[in-house]
Length: 69
Image 1 (cartoon, one colour):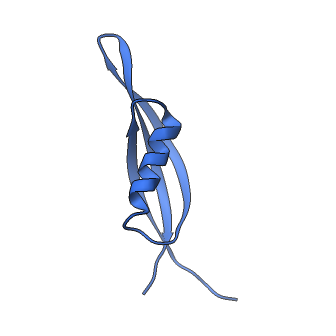
Image 2 (cartoon, helix red, strand yellow):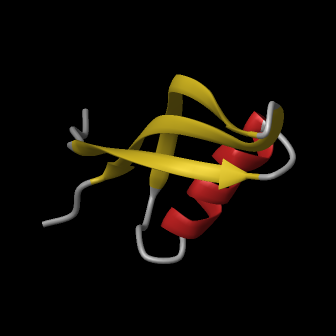
């Protein structure tokens, strides 16, 4: 059986449209410099509010990727 090691990092994605878009933006950006992304776990959702209106969505995620020696 082959063994693997994974590293987990925390990312925060943002979007003016939705939490889903914010998470996707974080993963899309991370995938440009990290290889073998595996799992993303949403750990926190929050909103940016200005003048009583929602103007932004933020999604905090833990992302794992395969660690290569």
